[in-house]
Length: 384
Image (cartoon, rainbow, N blue to C red; front, side):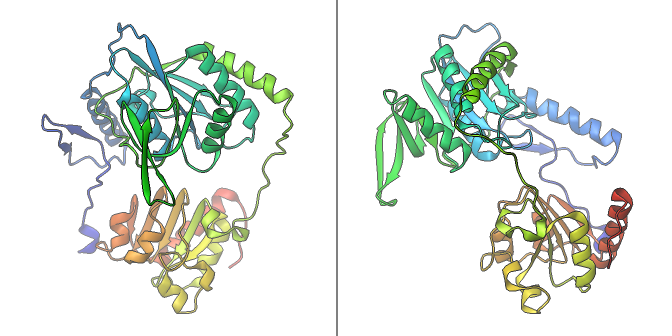
């Protein structure tokens, strides 16, 4: 009976009715060419149901600039929110321009951008702060944006935003912004005990969840290749005289990485009986090893492998869980994982509901089959 249970994917393509409610079209598996084509059609219908914020012939007199770094061609939720903030504050005579460091495969129109400038040679894979700053300043000089919106994420974007604020001290900068409107903003001060308000600064670094990235409209989504070439030239000139030299990245075995830094994690729960087989699969996939609290308490794994509220909180791009039912504490530990794949015999387990892809089956059988596939694909012998 469990194998006959069908789970409706809440993320499948949908349309919006007049009341703003989602309408998910049932009967589409998306597993074959016909299903994929139907999914694409419904996605397009959903996109077309949103109006353009600016008509094609609208004359703009000012612009708002959003700056983001991509990760493997996509913007994370925090970066999307920074673009959405610019789009929500723009009026009918204002263009929203998006500058992306790194490749971009996302639809700029869906993000709310009217014009998009992509510099794929930069981004998270390259440490070039002076080159990125030179490109950003060149764009600001060209467009003279009223405001610049950057996610305050504690890494590359935050560093770039503060460098920009130091280079253009007269412009004014606001960091850790948690509220924003067309006239002002607010940020917490004195260790979060005071909410300070001020007028809207020209350079705004937004905290996560300041705005909702889901927009009720679309941007024009135009690309500016000629402008991107000019910015790349300015960045290249700055890079040639930079005091920094990027020596590249060093590949480290997944087993040597801390769980909170791993990008791919294979995790075991109480449903995993063959630990040797599980570890062999993790080695073959070059993935870090994690475990649920129950598996750790049973002595199958060391305590530093425990994932959850009482263990490690992880943010891997892919999280593959074998035999984990999904206690609240464990789900709390994987809340920031991008893609979750769950293998479990219980179709009603909380982990199955959380997963982006669920496989109802025996963990040992799935691990054996997957290990065989990995060996064939990589032509590498992995000893059990």
